[in-house]
Length: 248
Length: 248
DNA sequence: AAGTGGTCTAGACCACGTA
DNA sequence: ACGTGGTCTAGACCACTTG
Image 1: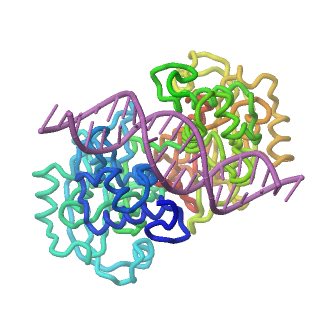
Image 2: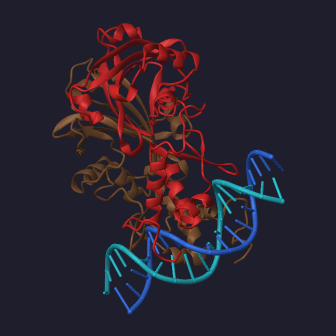
Image 3: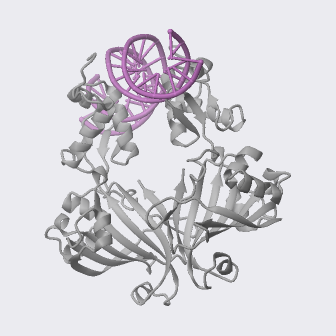
């Protein structure tokens, strides 16, 4: 294999391999938690050297799409494992400890996308949405109120009972529900953080006085190829918890 | 060079090279903005292959300690360049644009570390500190109030005039001042974010009413080897700006 | 023992920047 | 033309996991 890469193009070979593997992932050829073929196997399939496959996988691991386990193989990342299931939860106790919340769902509606949500989710204004509202309890106390919205087309047949069952019976997160029931895999997210105060809606839910300062976080969650799949707005009482961010 | 790496050890060779290069950086062998030796040169110096040096440099680039420029060389990261000088500023306008503030220094004091700051900076409580207070103006309006504290031992001979001159005359940031005048290079930082409300001190400085919701961000900035070198607490009016965080 | 990812080498060639 | 980083290869050996 001196010249003539498998799929000639202007991109470096390992970038092409990245695209091919990403396609396999998004098309469901390999499912979350499963192993993808070994590096040698992929090298044969794509007609490149093992080192080139390795570099492609290196970058996909950096992007949290794959996970390596020495001696075992390379696996499709999943949000259903203990340890990764709260990967997008950046709240810590004032002592710096991570705590895992329980959730109470308090609303399941259908609605239409307003201009802002439509823009964030890259859909047409007025598109059908599923709207979920919930409160997250940390150590038994309400700390986060979430307003979560997704295109209804992604969640055909979803019911409030299904969510309750997944979250309560299986101790799953919403993202693990998307993954197992709807083949939607969350890879990354963007958050816009502002300060606000509790209003008539959020104050009683978070058991604080109106006017209590709250973090307001608008999040868009993305799947493969940076496709936006979920929008949410979180109101957080930071009396006993803080949001942690590492800048590199 | 079949066996017997240059400095036998239990760490992978490229990890050892990383340590050697990091030592060169922290000891000032190569200064910010300067080029380090070429990969071939370093390979000869450390008696390893170019590929091994490359992997070491790859990771130091990921850690923002070095910057590659194809065809030119590999350079020591600096916070004095346009483009990198506001690398740690995560505030965007509501339209998602980055805006660069001007700063008004409103206080230069000396004090002692309380328990919290001492813990964060890994110094003894009561150690001498330099304390800076300033307001950052975005588009001419006050948005951020900063309380900044550093071990005085790191900033021998610093004066308020020196800071004013660096920031105003040279359009430099505080971090570029640390870098050029005190050989302190900020590599990473951790932030703890909470919501609060404007009080008697912050309200007039930010030109808002007492009780206005503010972001409160406690930051610790680190140099090489995760050594903490600066503590700061920022109060931010998020009426027209938001804090942006990318989760991967 | 066999298979996987992890490290390391030596050498080729390409792309970019400078002189 | 030359030196730099960037890509790619082929092959060796190590470390870890499983049968």
